[in-house]
Length: 139
Image (cartoon, rainbow, N blue to C red; front, top):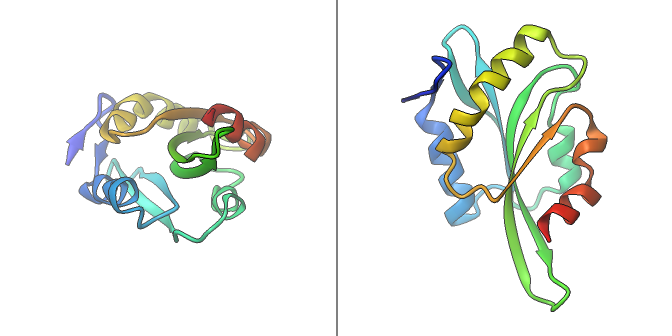
């Protein structure tokens, strides 16, 4: 277990699942949540490799904060297949202020545990993580 500056622990499962996404491409995305009772970040949802970006955005709750990573595949203008791993700090307007503060204070430390993330997005509503924005940030 790694501790963050806010006293939030990161479960070993989080790092293990992230390595599976990064190295083995076993998952398309991972959604993480903070368990307030145990004061640790845990894996909430694993996306299968064939799942779409819409499946990913649908897995984010409309009224609760989450962290997430998404393995985005794309083709460059030179017709080269590439992929980039996105980190998303999801903090919807409808979530509780305490939750927003907890996720904000733990984000940087948790993000550093995920070695290999290439792009970071912060979003308060779905329009801020639309597929167009992700494509734009990938290039």
